[in-house]
Length: 363
Length: 89
Image (cartoon, rainbow over all chains, first blue to last red; front, side, top):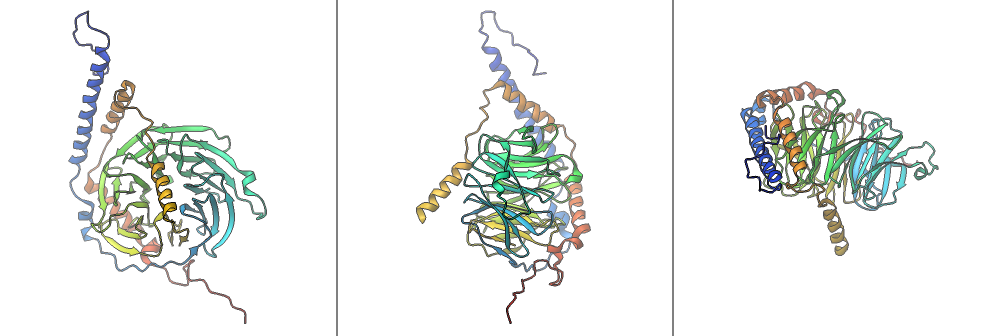
């Protein structure tokens, strides 16, 4: 047992400083051994590739997806967006400090709030549809209840919930309006009680900024996945705060993570220009979605309802649509005039929305 | 315009490359935690990729018909069909 104080035989004259360094060396060795063992265990079960299993599945035909709505109103880069559970409202946030709630059917703006900071990098709709959360360079996540009264000043009802020591990169309500999960440039994720602002659990393990997070579908229990600048995607137990699985195969920052609809896998998008699929039960990467011609980073990913399609928003202004099972690209969509920064499929899967540095959102 | 764009990009990149809060491996406590975490991760149960892949595929197939982006929707049922423009007669 390397953790007990098994001191090496040294003459009594030896200094005390020898011991901690030796234990450190033992730990480093054990760490390396474990990492190798982890890779071996994962490799043993790697008996086939996903696309090989999917060879017998029918290929997908031609996809014609058109922009149906263009939401204009932000004065600068759109950084984040989220759908309301009612499948028609959208909240978006921008570098100009504005958070806007839209009716995507009519393209009308229903609410607008000006944040005290620029670069509002994160926003989320509450499950009830009665509030939105947002934050960014202010290092906080604030919740704004949405009033039916259009004349009411939303900023007056603002509630500061989360406090980080660096920028807020992502936020999400859990399955109620009462708790919010956040990720930050300070390298941590945290779970907060909305009413009291109390920190319920913090999640440490990333070695650099955490850029994204996604909650597991409610049927699969209390876990979430996060991705960061350390190229790692971590899966966490929300109750204990423990990291239960970790994946490090990307070659650059992970900008976006999203669970597969069954909860058994998740996809990631990275600055290394690839999207990848990680299966949680096999505990490994099972697919890479990439092409030699795609050299710009992926900013955001999301699945269609059945999990067959993976949509990726890219820094080269396009959206690439991938066949998740076969690993091939089925479509490339053009329209935005600058990089796509955020992408979400609607709750009923009838559409997906993208936000871009070109100041607009498209559905 | 260009200088503004570069500044924005510089801000964007500097935001992402924040300095790490974790100290290097010279910290004994940190290393102990790393080893504990690795032991935990090494001990979890795993299934074969063939099994996991089959399950992923089965989920897709079972839900394919309920996936509007996959199957397409007719104009009449599409909530985002092109907006009709009202004009005054």
